[in-house]
Amino acid sequence: MFYRETGQFKTNYADDMALLPILQDRIGLGIILFVAYVIIPFFGNDFLLSTVMIPFLVFSLAAIGLNILTGFTGLISLGTGAFMGVGAYACYKVSSTFPDLNILFCIVFSGVFSALVGVLFGLPSLRIKGFYLAVATLAAQFFLQWCFVRIPWLYNYNVSGAIEVSQRSIFGVIVTGAKATPESRYIVMLVLVTLMTWVAANVLSGRIGRAFMAVRDMDIAAELMGIDLLKTKLLAFAFSSFYAGVAGAAMMFIWVGGGEANDSFNINQSFLILFMVIIGGLGSLLGAFLGAAFISSLPTILKFGLPAIGIPLAGATAEHLTYILVGGLILFFLIVEPHGLARLWQIGKQKLRMWPFPY
Amino acid sequence: MMQTYHQIARGDTLLAVDHVSLSFGGVKAITDVSFDIRKGEIRAIIGPNGAGKTSMLNVINGFYHPQKGQITFKGLTRSRMRPSVAASQGIARTFQNVALFKGMSTLDNIMAGRTLKMHRNFFWQCLRHGPAMDEEIKHREFVEDIIDFLEIQAIRKVPVGKLPYGLQKRVELGRALAMEPDLLLLDEPMAGMNLEEKEDMSRFIVDVNQQYGTTIALIEHDMGVVMDLSDRVVVLEYGHKLADGTPDDVKANEDVIKAYLGVAH
Ligand SMILES: Nc1ncnc2c1ncn2[C@@H]1O[C@H](COP(=O)(O)OP(=O)(O)OP(=O)(O)O)[C@@H](O)[C@H]1O
Ligand SMILES: [Mg+2]
Image 1 (cartoon, helix red, strand yellow):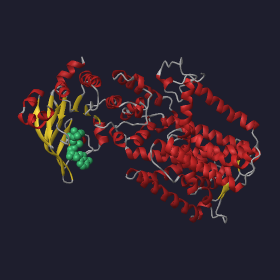
Image 2 (cartoon, each protein chain N blue to C red):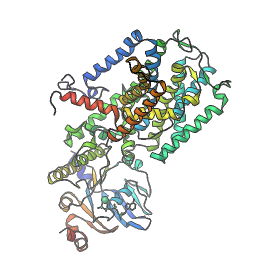
Image 3 (spheres, rainbow over the protein chains, first blue to last red):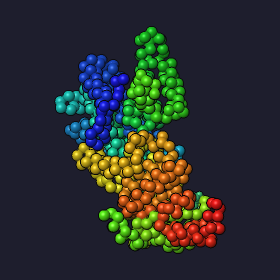
Image 4 (cartoon, helix red, strand yellow):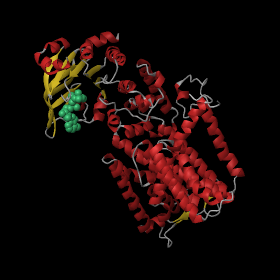
């Protein structure tokens, strides 16, 4: 009833080509931004910010990254965890080598560095596809993970072998290290995610996004349009790895505040992000958020939410239940709805547009 | 205005296929075939199934590399080339079994045909304002003209994978037209269509040829359509050239009647 585009006539192409051409969608986005920027930081407690929101935002970035590669360009990758690791170590090296450099700059730099590494490991994608490409990215995962452990220079020869995050501030506000408040860390994360989502939406709806999807849907025809397959695939790897790299750096510096790479950037992480993309919806930015929200909050909901409403659940059981639920949903979505939660949302909107008439 | 230009231009050789042979292992797809396509004409390529028609188009736009012979396009001679180079030289094409970008809308599919003409770099694409948006709008206007021309306004935003076959063929023609090609290769554009759809498609092909002066190479099994539309016809059989000439010449050719038309009747 209320979700209608009827009567909203576009008088020029610029309006029609806006990222969100329908008024109700723009209002919806406005409300989400208001909640994210105003309501949550003022009224949310530390638990909500540190345990729910910050991890969700970090995972959203990683899921956007993988979705650019797998959902939009059709190149499967099992190395997202490793590319996040590249970002984390790059950020660590740069920030410890140049202690006066703004931390945001370090984080963006780690994205760029990760993009370069992504291009390197993306080179085989011109010759190999599907299963074989998946294996090649798996090799990248293990090789990079090996580097993280075996090259002590990367973690500055720390005895612990872990990344140690020092205290950094932006405009006088402490944003990393033990003294940073959840609010400030949350806001930094939120700004990063807002900006990077906007950029991704821009790129994906223009010439380059169309080239990505053309390569995904029919590469021979894409070549015939003059789309250079190698360049386009490498650009997809670079763009995607940029997001993974920033997510990894943010994970270490803003979310967990340091730790060992083998725990954070292993194959499990790669799969977790792949699951987010599949459950959320391949080829949809909204899907990346939905998938990240679902998978990153599921353990918390099971562990804390269920006991809170009177259903007792042991920690280990909650963890097992998470695996079962996620596994079941992956099967469900792969078989029934490959476009994931994002498509279900679209179908829901379509129904709403027709409501109350069934047709 | 266009018409006079078109008439004058008609006649010069745009593309020459010179003693081309192509084989796949033991299978000879094309054997020593030569013919030319003149500027501004509609050139039909006909022949029974497996005659080598599609293979010939694949040679022309660089998907297949012939073992022998060469191709001269716009005065440039080459024996092998890449499809992307063919595209930048002005060769566009549609496929026998529709090769659209299934997950993209009609609009995006046709916009993809403008890729070679869009140059704003990655930085501007990130912002999607200023020059990038101007460029996007300019090309959107061009694409909207094609959409109007092909009468597919209603399916602008529909993912092409959901469209019926006849409309998909039309969108694929639109995508090829978006490249503003000098030579348009159409591989059975009317296969699987009903009479009305065939008539529409024939009209579009003639209009493209006359309004824009686009040279067209057309593969088609429907003899009525071929004889109506084309200026000249080349007939292939088992990879060999059987005949070459005006529709009337070809219709009267003994070999052709035996090999091809005879079967059809
Ligand atoms: N990629 C390929 N590999 C092996 N053989 C091929 C290949 N492409 C074509 N051929 C063979 O070349 C011959 C000519 O095929 P082609 O597709 O050019 O015929 P056609 O004239 O387009 O037929 P149709 O009317 O059925 O489309 C056939 O014998 C076919 O099997
Ligand atoms: Mg064929």
